[in-house]
Length: 314
Image (tube, rainbow, N blue to C red; front, top):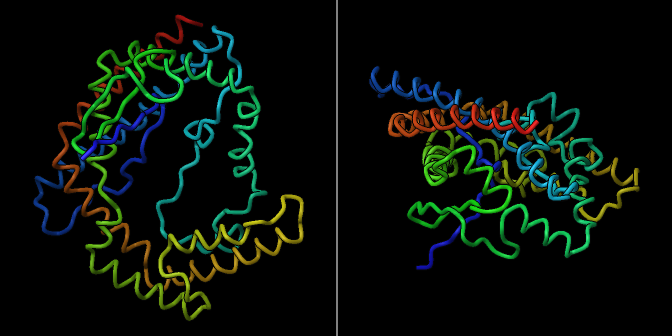
């Protein structure tokens, strides 16, 4: 079987564990303490990582600016900075009744995300290719980077260009950075779909939620994921300037979200999901405490190095 290679940008990070470290009643006090300790280390690492990424991004941008590049593609990590997407599966009653799921394209955050890449997208193709070469040392496909084989494929970061050189300067051992990054944000983080699929209490709540949605007029929505897809579908093919059509789409979104929120509250869907994820998180935190601690140490040092380099270049 051919292994897949994934290119990992220097500042892109997979979503992190957000469940608490509390475990089910069968966990021993020692395991509970280990899970809490590991979660505290992970929380500290995430805080340090935000600061490291900010300094790292500035270093990369300065490197690119020095080579004459002033326009950049949209950066989802930075454009969404400070905004934490709720881990809840169904919206709160307040949010549902005011913004639905937040899908309306007229909302400011949706517009910023959409418009962020316009300037870069408008650049001539040869300029964009030159930008890629300066940033990562390649244009069409990843090559010559630092790789980590996680068993089912590989992750890679550039070894050249502004991104690659900045990574080396900040982390030193880039392969160890990749290994710990993958372990903490992929191996430690459990597969949510599997966790929820194995939890009887959650599955019961989900079934009750789907029945409630059906009774509320939405028989075609069996899961929270489908609910959000349905919300987005209200805006498909609606022209940007058609205020009346957009208003109608928003009303339909809010009506659906309100039913979703009411059903979720009635069956306790969000609570059951958090409980299931929390149990699984505790087991994983205990198993990978050593890697999490090593990740905290690496990120703390990298943050200090990136900030030091930034001061020097300023």
